[in-house]
Length: 223
Image (cartoon, rainbow, N blue to C red):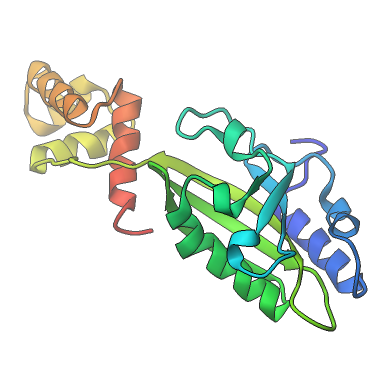
């Protein structure tokens, strides 16, 4: 996209700005390096930690995730908030707080990739954490730059036999129901019935949704 920075370019600019910064530099002076329009699947935020205890973390969003989705209510989730009032405390306890505490205590940036279950979906992401430089105690703020690569609904009950697996695989390859029937030696009507049964089992609205839910169910075991 013309005039839009890639995640890699933003990472480099933020790291350069952090390296050149002095003790006591404000977060805004560093994240200005990434203030050109970002891709819609990227988030830029600042986490403040001004009081003792991890529950005292608070977040302000500078650039928000803006990809259209119905899986999560990003409009609400990206309002400024304190950790103690966030709805998913398990996510904070096991994912966000450990990562932020480590980076802000060690006062060194961290670039990572990973996946996390949040709400009723799986998020695959890449993330840069850039903490405040401090010659005395821990950092009091941390810049968070994150790119969401995949946002998929959690899936349960996706049971399938060998024929179902072949149908699903061929659907991911773009095959039509007629082509699948010819390949498997089954009538188009049989293929249609099996697809309808799979859709009903997992609540898929159409073929595209069915394939997406199947892929999401497979990713539960690998990321």
